[in-house]
Structure formats: structure tokens, C-alpha cells
Amino acid sequence: MLQAGSIGLLGLGMNHAPALRAADSVTSLAMSGQARSTILVFLSGGLTQHDSLDPKPDAPADIRGEFSPIATQTPGVFVCEHLPMLAARSQNWSLIRSLTTPYNGHSQGHTSILTGRTPMPTGYNGSKPQLTDWPSIASVVGDAVPKRTNNLPPAVVLPERLIHYSGRVLPGQFGGLMGSRRDPWFIEASPYNPKSYGAYPEYEFHFVRGRERNKELNFQAPNLSLPQGLSRSRLTDRDGLRAMLDLQRRDLEQNASIESFDRHRQAAISLLTDSSVQRAFDVHNADPQTLDRYGRNAFGWSLLMARQLVQAGVNLVQVNLGNNESWDTHDNNFPLLRDCLLPPTDRGMSALLDDLQSLGMLDETLIVMVGEMGRTPKVNAANRSPGAKAGRDHWGAVQTVLVAGGGIKGRVVVGASDKNGAYPAFDAQRPENLAATIYHAMGIPDSAAWKDELDRPHHIYHGEPIAGLS
Image 1 (cartoon, rainbow, N blue to C red):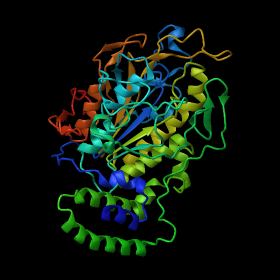
Image 2: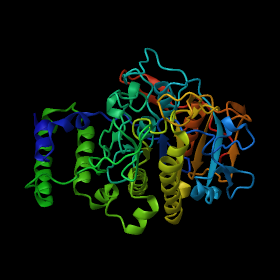
Image 3: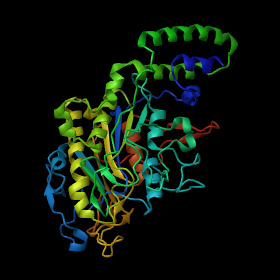
Image 4: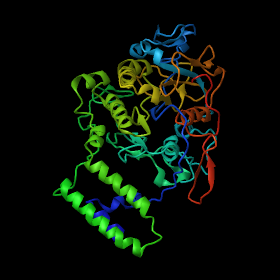
């Protein structure tokens, strides 16, 4: 009763109670990695490797596609002509051109990449998340790496959960076997939008209808204001009263999980009263030059918020660039990539690299940009929708991953796809290797484990970190 009452004293609703009751099972680890934070940029739907980071200019036209390659600052490395800003910064990033999974379906692809596990878990259901799913990389890192400052959550996903237009929530993004209390914290800055796609407002589109503008779509950071009538001084007074009640509660509840309760209470107070924490979520009031550099759209705002959150002390931020499988370009692949998808990604990612470097944070912030799959080598001849132009279909056999910062060397290319961009030609990498690369960079020992709700240990590593990147 006193625990519930002290929640009310803080002006928080009972919907916060589960988090406040959660028990702490994080084990302190001796961290040795170079990265203090990771920004995992996830391109839901599947970025076509041919038309982005692994062009095939010598392939036949129906494989090569419509775009031309351009040189980067790395000798011999070319990318798509619609990524000029990233091309000019290749000294700061590297590529993995041989990531492979056996899955051509979105659900399995999301699960495999976001959890770092190739086999699907027992009883897997691609239509809904389950407590028997593998935990997401975000959940594992959030649990394993000690929290840093400001009582901010250790792992954050923004600007939305990954939800199909049908309302199906994609599995792989949650705590799964670790338990829901170790889900990452989802910042719902973008409203659920089943009707259109991309970086609204200026780059919003529909796969068949083309460019659109939905006036109801607004990017909004979390409201961290205090309840009406509750000032900071009154909150302090209430916190003092809570401390007095704690003295009485300790006599009544010798076995209660007071430490966990107190940790979450302090986190709630920090979110409500710490101005530096509130600034980390505030993207619309950034200076105009910064907003222009990132882009005044959902992609730019999301990447700017990610930078501010790692600067404030969050260990891992997953940025979902594109709602509702925005990169699923079965139709109109070339005009949509050229006009709506690649430009805001190129601008936002370049601004992120520039900012982290100028702030002295690039060496301690790992950046990984990946989707759940690549796209078919051949441009499809029969489009799914009448009147639509050519596209590329699902292809899990190979995709390209961009990595930067966090001890990753720039100007490196790991592996290669074959001449048609269909399969790894050599040095194939699995999701387990990509996940291990993140864990290693974050300083998580390869002997580390997490425990499930039944106190059973589970290994964190299921593969070796990718050689040659650090």
C-alpha cells in the first residue's frame, strides 16, 4: 500500500507501477570496449544493396538498375549517386557487403537481425511477439552495460515501434525471454500511420500513388512536464515525505525490493525535473542550422534525437528510419529511392557523423545501419500494382551494412557479394557476427550471460565479432 501510495505522491499514474516494481538483475561487468554508446539505425522493409551501397555497374541492365555509381573518398569503393554526402565522408565509415540470412519474409528477417540470431525460437509466431522470442540486441545491451548518467533508460527505440499497416506488431524488438521488464524504452514520437510511408512531411510517399502529405502526422517528443499544480519545490517536498514513509516501510517490509523501487522512482524524478534530460528529447528547438543539416523531417529529427540521447548518457538508441516497412520497394523502386528515401537518409546520417566527430564522440559511439534483408538482384518485370514502375522484391541472401565509430576503422570493406549482388562471394557474415560486433565494441565480455525469469543463464554471444573492422 505504501509503495503504491508513494507513486501517487510523485504525481505518477498507476500505469508506471510495473516498471517501479521491477527487480534489478544487472550484473556489473568489467567493460573494455571502446564504444560507450551504440546508435542502431534500422531500415525496416529492406534496403536494396544494388541501388545504395553495393552498386553493380557491370551487371546486365535488369540487375544494374537505373542509378549510376559515384566514387567515395575510399579508393576503389563506389556507392549510389544519390548518396553523395555519405560518399564524401567514407573516411569515417566502413561496409559489410556480405551479411546473409535464409529469410525472405519480413517477420523472420526483423527477428533475425534485431536479435542477432539466425534460427527462429521455439514456437515462433511471425504475426505477434511472444515471451519465448529471442531478446532484442537493444534489450541485451540495455541489460548488460551499466547505466551511465541522469537515470535515463539504458536502451531506447525511436520514433516508433515497428508495426505493419495491418496492425501486426513485428516480433524481435522486445525483451522476449528476458521478460517484458527488460524491453527497451519506446519513444512514440511518430504517430502510428498505416496509410503512407517515409520521412514526413517533405518526403512522405505511398508506394503506388507517389508523394503524399498527411497533415495529421506530427513528430512529437515525449511530454516530460510535471502534473498540473505540482511545482519542482512541491515535488521535492513530496520526495521528502516519501523518504519518511520509507523509514516506516523498511520496518514493515524487510524482504521488499526497495532498491529496485527507489531506482525507478529516481529515474522518474530525473525525467521530470532534470533540464538536461528534457533537452535530450527536444529536437524542434534546436538551432536552425542544425535542423537544416539533419533535415526537417522524421528521419532527420530521429537521428538528431538519437545523438542528443547518447550525449545525455543512453547506452543504445535504435532509430527506426521508416514506418511500416518503408524500404519495401516492390513498386516504383527507383523514383522512391531517388526522391523520397535516399536523400533524407544521406543528409541525416552525414549530419550525425559530422556532429559526433565535432563533439569528440565518434570514437566512443558505434553506428550500425542495417535492414532486415536486401532486395532481389533482378528488377521485377511484373509489378504488383497496376501502373506502378519496376521494383525489387525480398532477398535475404545478402545485404550491405554501414558501420562507423566506436573503434571501427573507416575505409574498410568486409566481404563482397557476387557479380550480380545475389549471394556472398566470400567472407559471409551472419546476424550473430553483427550482434557480437556490437557487444564487443560495447565492452561486453564474450563470457557474459543474462538470466531469464526462472534464473537460468543464457549466453549473450552466439558468434564471433567481425574481423578487420577494429
